[in-house]
Image (spheres, rainbow, N blue to C red):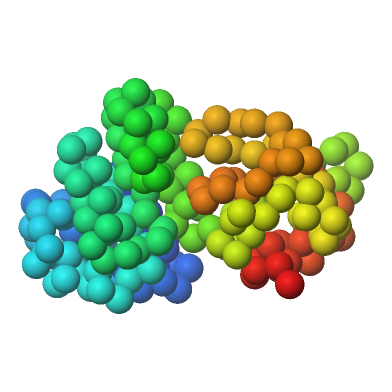
Length: 213
């Protein structure tokens, strides 16, 4: 929802990766930002209106991003997507960092404009894989950001160290970094930052992309 510069850029990036994309905006003229080669669906209307969402294909979608220029519209649309249509990967753009923190604690992933980029939104919508955040000078060890499968929720962090070749360095929880302890249990929405040898990254990511056995 929202076809401003970031919404349009995000839509084009997702389409280039092979995803089917629908984009909603109140202004038909906004869709010009998508260019003539955009093959996705454009819907003119209010992004939290259920009829508009259904027209855009909300009932069959896997992810929803609310990136208009209005906090209230974004959070309302995000809540409708998550609570009415049970969309798991939902993220809302919030201009007010204080409000963003409140909604984050309510379980709605938000990104405030002070830290917001198209890349952050993209990685929340398509959480598979890993993103290298740091690499040692030899290039043999990386600190990778990984989104674990929901089957790991409720499991102790130590289980990841035990079952994979990675070592959890820290966790981003509710927008804040925390150091895990032996008794730390993975919660919904946690982002793992794992130290992994370059040769083991694909294997560790594959293990965390499915529920532990």
